[in-house]
Structure formats: C-alpha cells, structure tokens
Image 1: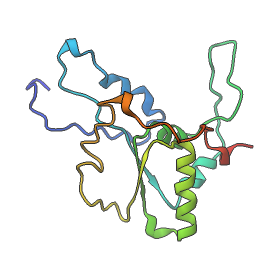
Image 2: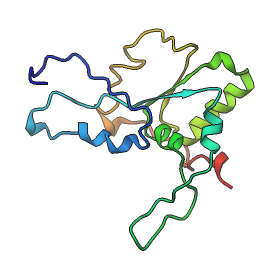
Image 3: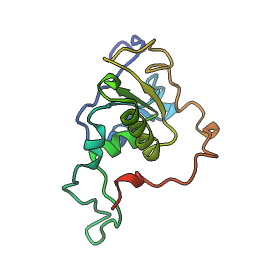
Image 4: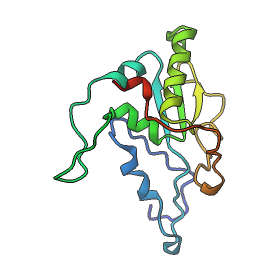
Length: 161
C-alpha cells in the first residue's frame, strides 16, 4: 500500500464475516483524501445445495436497537445478511441440485435481495471475470439504480413464521 496506485485490484474475501455491511463503509472514503481505492461491488457466493438450509437455521442471538429496545419481527441468519448486502450473488454447485431446487434457490435469493444480479455456476467456473465478479461499478451512479418495478420488499417472506 506504500506504493500508491500500484494495485490493479484489491479483492477482499470475507468468508465467515457475519455482516459485510460493517466492512463496506471502509471503502467510501472522502474524495478530498485522494484515495484511489473504491468499493466496486459486493459479491456473495452461495452453495446451491445448502443455502436453503442455511437460511432456515435458527437464529441464536437477538438484534438490539439499544439497551432498552429490541427489534420485533424476523431475525436474520448470516446467510440473510450476506445476500442482502450483495450486488452480485453467485449460486455455485448448481450441478448438485435439480431444476426445481435451483429455481427455489433463485426465488428465495430474489425475495431477500431483488436488486442483486444472480449468476449460476458449476464447480466455480465463471465465463469471465470482468463484469461478472470484477469491474462491477455498482456504486458509480447510485441515483441511476432501477428500483422501480422491483416490488415492495419483505425480507425473505419464505423464512418468516
């Protein structure tokens, strides 16, 4: 990092990070500071065979507003948080599920994050990196995001009691 501008790309892999939303703001640096590092996008990789189980696992902790109030409503698993923050969701291992299960996975992910691009892969093979995992430019023009017609969001209605 001492050689400013020497990096073509920094790919930050955060497997196991419960909430990618905690790290993303680190890349929204004031332009006046002259940072050449920026957040290109958040990519979440899900396992087609196991993601529905992960989304349905019981949540052990409650989310607290502050010491006096707790949130009412559904609690989120780690998988919910990771999918909800994603600009791109890659559903991998699609060869391990049938078409009906793959459709269920796609629909569940879209119910959690209707704005994310969804790509389906087998054995981690991607056609190309640019525009698929890199050079996403997800935050270049936030005002131009097409959120009309995406419907009213309910965080994962399938997982609610």
